[in-house]
Length: 631
Ligand SMILES: Cc1cc2nc3c(=O)[nH]c(=O)nc-3n(C[C@H](O)[C@H](O)[C@H](O)COP(=O)(O)OP(=O)(O)OC[C@H]3O[C@@H](n4cnc5c(N)ncnc54)[C@H](O)[C@@H]3O)c2cc1C
Image (cartoon, rainbow, N blue to C red; front, side):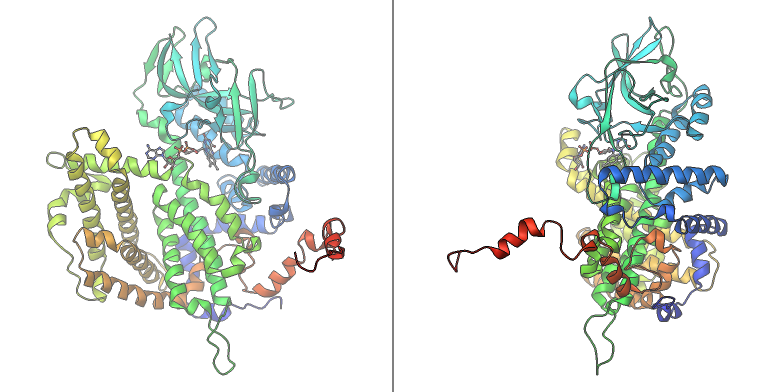
């Protein structure tokens, strides 16, 4: 029945002010209002319909994406949207070339361009008179940026760079928006001046004609082909690109950090060199925000559906048990709900993206068979999200960088005071000596005890790696040999950061009845779930006794019971429209079964009762006259 809210009983159970939680989740009342306005604008515009996407062929799919992006841009211009434009693009919810144009091409110029370059290129890009992408990765190298092979050779005769792809493996491969749409790219290449290599730098290169969009001379460009899943990331034209001695003016090298003069001299400005990585950092921050968005969407779907779905447990012909009431369901779902909140307030690219990708898949399983239907919204969400573990830094490669920093910090402890995220290492002596003091399950509801447990685990794992490394004559060989343990130490450090930042966030004043208490409860769920999951680390480092680990698990069970009545209200607080969720299982009104039934009949296979191909391929089998009864 339309208009009935099948989840209203669940909504009555909430013990906190949902409207105030929406503000806490959005960050501010203004952010909530702006995002709400954009979400509804998209949801109510039929041009942004997305349910038919997984059934489209590639060409139709890409054309459809181009149409949506054009319609989105028209809205941005007509309604003079400024800050809200990013929300509009988010709620259109379709990976497109515009993500790279706004998310990487423009930030690369802003971060790495000189004032003059910014003055020339940014207005063109911001008015979309040119469309750009970010061309770093090649067929042969991604993580190892210093291994890129594309060359940019300075020619002082003409005051130009010659961009060239010397090998097959130097072909640019993966950049989003490159395949079919971009007119320009920031291309990363080896700078060669006077026959010498001077590092990898970014260059603005025009790829296609601004009149007829054909590739310019010397440029071979196309799409790299279908990717994982139906619809999903196939709305993006990830591309391949080769250069055959393409000439660009000298002033198209991004020169904020390193300059090449007319005479071929290399100059370094005193702008910090890290700037060159500024774009990556910016993008990683966005990716972390995306982790909480993607995980919260999956959790919203799985939580609402778990309240609708009933299996077993009927007594005297009464209703069966809601699957959300099973402890096993709670122990899988509620830590993900808590993680979505944790990642909203803090995050680190490597651990949040991995947890989110795994979490979306877990949500699919939590929805049983129906979770496997595309109309659950989960397969597409999973397919679109999982490459976040790879792009902008493979997670393992990033964790190895963290590990390198950790063992360096450990080796310098005697004479250098650690600061920032490793400040806790300054108390390494006490963290190595003192053990956990918790005596009861309630004793775990103590932020100090939790932070200290995570600090002790991280410090002890880093120190152990440091000691093992010291036994190797060649530190690099040692690092390679111990790299799997080093990654575990890095994960422990990153989890400590997320836990302690979440706790720090709760020191602030958070208005609204019960909002702060509810967030505290989620914070305990997040921390104690991690402690339970990784109890091997906590026990092996000797910080916890098995009894204390078991008390933490007892407390976790109690917390799940406290989360239960608030579960639906907690996912309502994400404030997602049904359009953005894109899931029949996650519908706000819980009206799942009639809508699933209706959707099945919309599948093109059901256009006719007798399927295409029946007469050619099935009927002859049915009508065959075999001589033998048995085969
Ligand atoms: C959907 C998608 C969109 C993308 N968009 C863009 C884009 O717009 N622009 C762009 O330039 N690029 C883009 N990329 C490319 C992306 O940035 C790279 O794929 C990514 O950086 C990983 O590099 P790789 O492919 O070389 O992986 P590899 O480094 O080859 O990884 C393969 C395996 O080797 C392991 N490994 C690598 N190095 C080490 C090491 N030192 N120690 C231990 N293990 C190691 C990794 O953990 C991984 O398991 C995109 C990729 C995808 C999937």
